[in-house]
Structure formats: C-alpha cells, structure tokens
Image 1 (spheres, rainbow, N blue to C red):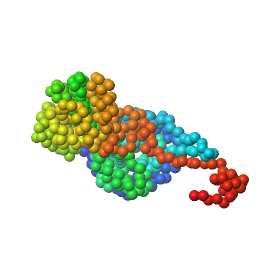
Image 2 (spheres, rainbow, N blue to C red):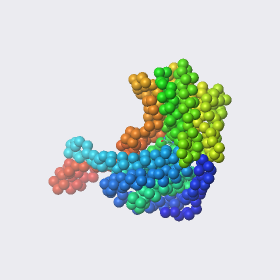
Image 3 (spheres, rainbow, N blue to C red):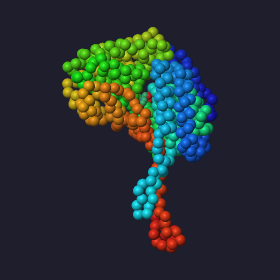
Image 4 (cartoon, helix red, strand yellow):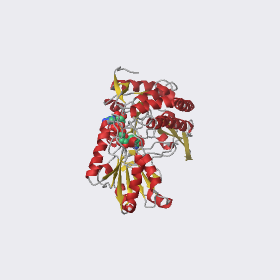
Length: 478
Ligand code: NAD
C-alpha cells in the first residue's frame, strides 16, 4: 500500500545492531490508507458472524506463529524472548475473547405511550490505533480485537522504534481479513498527527505517555473524534507491617522489573513501614540480585536492556538525584553486562524521599525507590493528592484491611498481594491523568460502538387523524 518506498533502520537495544528496515510512510500514505479503509467499511460492518469467524482464525494463526513473531519482537524491543512470545499468546486470547463475547446489536427499551424504542449499536467507523514501544503487540491487540468485532476498520500506527512486530502481525492478520479492513503505517513524526487530524478517522485509541495523549486529544478535537487514552502511571506498592518480606519482595520485584521496568502498570515505588524498613529493603535487594541481565534472546536472561538510550539515561539520572536527595543505593547502579546496549541493573534505592523525582514522577525503567512511612493514612493522602491514578497494590495477609485501603485509593486498578495482573474481561484504565475510557471486557467493546436510537410510533396513516405520525394530515411538527 506504500506510496513512499523509502525505509529506515530498526536497532536491537541489546547489541545496537540493525535488526531490519521498516517503511518510512508519509502523511500521503495515511490518506491513502484512510481512503482504502472507506472502501471496505460497509461490507465489514454488515456481517458480525463473519467478523467473529475471522477473529477466531486470527487467534489460531497468531498462536501457531508466536515463536517466530516473538523473536522479531524480542530483537526490536529488547524484552526477554518468553515475554515477547507471551505478548502474542495474550493477543490470541484477546481475539478469542472478543470473538465469543455476547452483545446485543439492538436493544429494545420498554414501550411507552405507543412508542417503540430501539437502541442500535453501530461501529464508530475508522479507528487510528497508536501504540507505544513497551508492549507493541498486546497493547495493539487490546484495541484491534474489540474494534474489529464491533465492525470498525483500523489503521495501526506503532512506535517508530518497534514497527517490525506490528508489521508482521498485521501481515498475518491480512491473510485472513478482507482487503483494507486493517492497515499499518510506520515511520516517524507526522504520521500520528495525520491520523489524529484527518476527518475520515472517527476514533483514536492511544496508549502512551500522558504528554502525548493530551496532544492527541487536542489534535482530535477539531474533527470531534472519539478518543480512548491509556496513559502513564506511577503505581505504588503499599506494604503493611504484617506482610511477609520474601513473598512480598518476590511479587514486587517480579512486577517492577518485568520488561526492564517499562510497564505502565508496574510497581514504580514502594512504601514500607519504618518499623520493618530494613527487612523489606533487604528482601527487595536480594530478589533484585537474582535477576540475570542480558540479551532477551539468550537463554537464562531474566531482564533485558531498556529500550533506548534516552530512557536509560533519564532513569540513571533519577537514581543519581535520588541518592543526592538522601536515598541510599541498596542494589544495582551499574549495567550488569558487557553488552553494548542500553542496560541498567535492577536498581533499588532505599530511604527515598517522597519528593525526589524517582518517587514522584513516572520513572519507567529498571529502578525502584523504597520510601518509609510512619502512618499509612499519610501515604494514602499523599498518593491521592497526585495526578497519576493507573494502579496500586496493597501487601498484607489481612484481606479485610487490604480491602478497606483499596476502596480508598484513587486508581483504575488496585491489586492485593500481587501487581500487574490484568484480566481479559475486567476493565483496565486510569483515573485522572492516567487516562480516559477503558479497555478489556465489554467496557473495551463499548469504546468502539455508538448508539442510534430509533423511536417509532405506528402512526395513523390513512385515518386522517391528528395523532403524532399522521402524515396524511399534513402536520410537520419539529
Ligand atoms: P509516547 O507517548 O512517546 O508515544 C506513543 C505513541 O505516540 C508512539 O506511536 C509515538 O510515535 C506517538 N506519538 C509521539 N508523539 C506524538 C504526537 N505529538 N502526536 C501524535 N502521536 C505521537 O510513549 P512511549 O514512549 O512509546 O511509551 C511509554 C509511555 O507509554 C509511558 O508513559 C507509559 O506509561 C505509557 N504507557 C501507558 C500504558 C497504559 O495502558 N496506560 C501502557 C503502556 C505504556
């Protein structure tokens, strides 16, 4: 579908070698993709059973190809191979889930005064799916599956630095989907802007930073596009005094350093009670020390590199500042490998003050600050006073106490004795600056549907009466 044939190189974040090249599409390519999607829209929207069958076939094809696709993803993104393969199996699960989800295309409300009310659910139209580099596939699939089953056409726009896995998955899907239902545009700069401003695009579904999300919302405003925004987070883990140190540390470290800490809903900061701060910090440092840093493709690697130099340098700078602000390096600080890529050891900063940027901003990398509290109510007030509201977790064997705390945390998800687990049928999304709209479950589907209310009366046709709908009487009540 390319108008512009030029390409650009994609690099492996572990070795800095060139992985492959991707098309450098332009705004003209996006316009062409929009026009082509228009030719496919009506037929695709017309047959829900055909869409469900297509999604089931897509799920099967992705499962079969997951090992090959996962390798492409691991090489361009840096993540551990098994996590890369898992992104595709998660994607397959999402396609299966939305293929099987039951939903009424028309809902009838109770009749009143002879009026029949039908609420029809229609696809919103062409969707621009804009995704970040940390989970290029699962974050795309969580948009594609509900959008496609709803009857929308989609143009996917991956991050400039991780286009290869998206291209590969879209190519595979297009062996099953009718022509022009799904397209992928890759490249730099203006591409997302073309998607979020062109009138033919009816909705933008975006996952990425809060800064870019708000820019996209503004870009989409003049053409009144619907927007779903999954944005940044700064998830706390609140450890209560009765928690078990080794169980808690294993759970927190597993979340905090998955994908080298580049997970929107990873634990990004830990609050521990002063009375047991040393024990918990020691357990966290020991669990972090167990992670082997290396290339994602190599057997035995527990954590890959960070995705790019800017992100690695940013997080390294935040660690440096946190130690200057009074924090103490409890583990890490180095690269942990001889490889030339953007590596950073899993790094634990103890006694981190609440107002150092490693704690109070989204650090998005291989570092984890541990802060001390005297009164958990003060931690709660501090957290609820901040702008991020994606997720949080509470760690304690006392589920009643955990539930009480969870019910007062301003966030889209609260986990208890775990963190980062998401469910295919439960809503996911942020409060406040962490987002708008929901993904997953029926909530995710409704983001791609719009209603048409058909309000009907039989009408006194031919009777010459004066009731509403008596067209023969020449009435034209507005
Ligand atoms: P990013 O916001 O820089 O980029 C995301 C996408 O937007 C990319 O495809 C990029 O090319 C595009 N983009 C960049 N600038 C744009 C602009 N001005 N107009 C239109 N499009 C533009 O995010 P990233 O660096 O790729 O990913 C990291 C961020 O994503 C973190 O903040 C993280 O918290 C967030 N994130 C959120 C979730 C969630 O579900 N809430 C999930 C993953 C990542």
